[in-house]
Amino acid sequence: AFLTFANMTYPKDSTDRWVYVVYLLALNTAMRAGEIWGLKPSDLSRDGRSIQVLRQFNRVTLEMTPTKSKKSRLAPLNDELREELEHLIKTKSIEADETVFMNELRNPVCHENFVKRQF
Image (cartoon, rainbow, N blue to C red):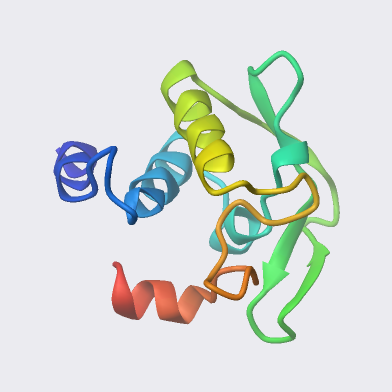
């Protein structure tokens, strides 16, 4: 029900569609918030079935750091999520070394701002 509501609130043609993709990613992969903000296009597997979780955006230092466990892992990537991520990457012209979710200055999303403004 939550994803249906978010999908209607942030339709495919909306400039805020990325918010829906964040929710879809969190609920389908169990990635932590910092890991979501640290996601880069290069983390999507070539076969389109998984995401390699390599880093997190540290909300205190505002830097990329290793994951909480200091280990990389694979998160599942279903067809709907893969299509949404690929569409977002393409429409926003996101380079392989940039984060998928970024602000107007092309910096990673600040978690506190996301919670206050979106969630």
